[in-house]
Length: 402
Image 1 (cartoon, rainbow, N blue to C red):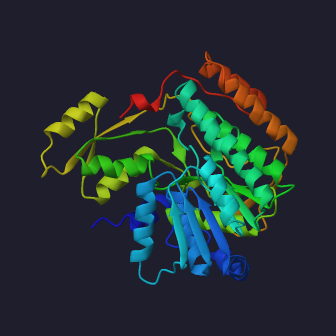
Image 2: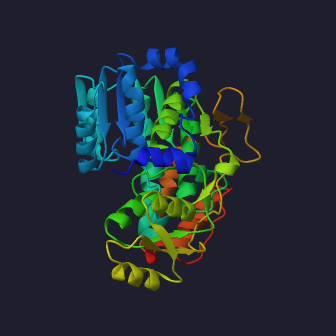
């Protein structure tokens, strides 16, 4: 059987040991004191990062764990996986809820079942491909910004001891709406951190996470389809386990308003095409470059099951909002590289307070009520709200590619 965890360690992260092993060991007493016997709510817990956070959290034995996610099948698999893992601690009070954190039923659950000691929020639109037009962008901004502000308002009623909300490296000098929405979300978290112990984190691509291009490689291979990827986009990667550990460390150890990020070396930045080549070779295949998608599809259709070659199509990125490289902080941010061994911390500063964030949400609601709203009008509004936002518009979407 293909060992994905070993492949990630050998060919993607280049690490046999977690990047955060030293920080976890150093701060183990603080983590245990914050989690053991406590109540925990994880929003978006069926996704790769949310479920990895849960796996990093459970060894510290919380008394209560509630998991919310719209993905009912994902919650089912999470439960089965936890219940089927030898030695895995699962609290007696463990519940999963397939509901949206933006719905009234979620607010009723929070008010009735709270307060929670730890609240970790991972529910987000995370793909640049999800910003095609007015409708997709509205859904993204509503989920990433407006629903998150509604959650912060709920938490003011019953403040947790720790609140964490995941961000993205794309919030640093955003070039796409997803990054701008996450930057605006960061602004909200920082504004509310005056009233709540709110912390966030930017981090790299999570290798083979749900819906990611590398995870798609496995799907394509299972269906005997060609692999396709940009050859000019470089990314940092952490493993799924490392993504959960990073978020756990930030959630428990961060001061209100902190923004965490992983300390990664630039030589470990990889292209998606390099990962595809390594994956095929590890599985015993030889990548064969094709000049077009049509050529790659035709080659895959003709290929026999005994053929040791595999068609691939690598291209120059040309879709809207794509950045050629990642960055975790900007030149004007105050960064602390000394507090942790493998984590940098940005001392978050904001131009907003809670009142201005509420006003921004009201403005966005008014904007989205306009029947003839265009994508460009939304981008213009976001550029005003997020001055560092420099949208890269090419008129092309990833939905037009394999």
